[in-house]
Image (cartoon, rainbow over all chains, first blue to last red; front, top):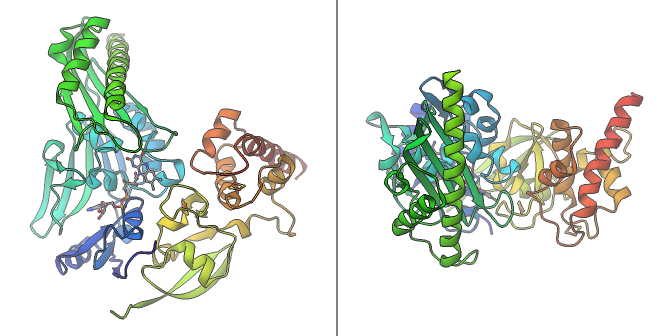
Length: 292
Length: 165
Ligand SMILES: Cc1cc2nc3c(=O)[nH]c(=O)nc-3n(C[C@H](O)[C@H](O)[C@H](O)COP(=O)(O)OP(=O)(O)OC[C@H]3O[C@@H](n4cnc5c(N)ncnc54)[C@H](O)[C@@H]3O)c2cc1C
Ligand code: FES
Ligand code: FES
């Protein structure tokens, strides 16, 4: 279980890093290494060159303002999770981050690294899609913004080009009259979950006017389902059952060593009801606070 | 392919070392093989078991998921660095001994480093918080009851230390 040999560079500027990537078709970015190093050690990946971006300046920022939360490529999960402004502007970010791996992994792993690693079992890619966030990348052609919907193209596959570096992620702020919730079921707290669901619900006069839910570990790519129609304004048991049916019609849970497809479907159903209810409550609370 | 060898400086437990390693040398292997600090144990080598946990600038991290070349310039603390200056057991080590928090000891270095950092952040954990503190570390033989007790006892010893200082 040792990585195959590779060349290692640790550039001190973004320009040098881009050059190193452009110079070799089999070069790979190394950020926190918490997903990449296991892949190298198991020899599931054997890049010729690793471009360690940990020495790049000005990429470890976490900024929250009225628009939303901006997270630099070198901000560690732990740093984002600790930030009180992030929690205020978009509470779904810390709710989900608290279940990303164990604290020790969060001390090194980056949130942007997790987003571009594009694992459908990971929390943050799903949250980015659910919130309609985006990732900014820089490549030989300059900077571009990739909307979350265009970022996830297949299992562990993002639409980033091999010579691009993700520099910043953007999670939009919680909108007025909206609420969020997240819950997942894992064998052990901190492990990849067997199923996880997040929801964003908007209310007007207490009635649900929009509801979307994001799902992890029950599809190939992070999945988002619009439940507005199925709920028809309410979160009664009957409405929640309709919402779960609507979600399961598009999800594709699979069996693996951790759980059967049936069990994952069951979890998706139960969690849909729980998080939609919780997000509805949060939305009403949020709406009341705005009025007072 | 002849592998390039990197000469790097690693600062471990306050002592500066120079080592010559290929880029693929895991930090866990650099500590054990190049520096002879075999207190850091290697179990799974993919981040799951926690045996290899060390402190990097005070924060617990997996040494099996870091390359030695990336760790140059950081202040590293291994289990060998947890004793008191006079060589007697540090608070967490003492608590593990008192509470019977280890049997074979394979997992212990990772628990000791993790808990040392955990208590620095939360000096007075509840039992639930203590359990959460060690949730990323696996022990195959002791079971977690005594380890959780040891976390709470270590907090107590550290408090007594502070009060008498
Ligand atoms: C035991 C364990 C449990 C875990 N549990 C979870 C979990 O429950 N949920 C979860 O979401 N994650 C989990 N993780 C993964 C963890 O969150 C990783 O930190 C994260 O997925 C990747 O971030 P990183 O910075 O470590 O990236 P790396 O491992 O360095 O890189 C991952 C991939 O992304 C690419 N990359 C990284 N950053 C950039 C960038 N800026 N630009 C371009 N490409 C880039 C790399 O080339 C590589 O292909 C777990 C990891 C471990 C070891
Ligand atoms: S050896 Fe590093 S986590 Fe298991
Ligand atoms: S004491 Fe043996 S594995 Fe923990």
